[in-house]
Image (cartoon, rainbow, N blue to C red; front, side, top):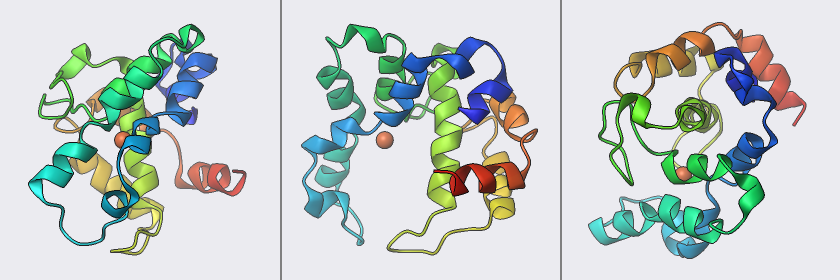
Length: 161
Ligand SMILES: [Fe+2]
């Protein structure tokens, strides 16, 4: 939400967007734990099943009207700015802004937390990594807004969770 506020617009004050962020991976309930928590390489079939989670999630929430635009975050949080993401291969501004914002925040969170196959990166390294994918994976404008938020602010936010 901090990043949504930095991007501007009313995005940062929207409860619908916040719920969309919180529920983004709800579709993973359809993926067996043995696949979700697998630490070795995924087979093509396993990967295809995981890649369905945004579609499954959007389907689960389809009739929850008050989520409004939040549902677009659930469906599109794995799209990439260059159009090579999933599930719809949307590119650039075709991707809902909230989903473009979330994609950066999700990657920041992934990079800065311990995973079974690697330790957490420091904030500064995560920032370099995100900047490296500006214009390919991420919306450059969102990455610019992200760069306005200091590392200490992210550390503080994580501490308050
Ligand atoms: Fe996801």
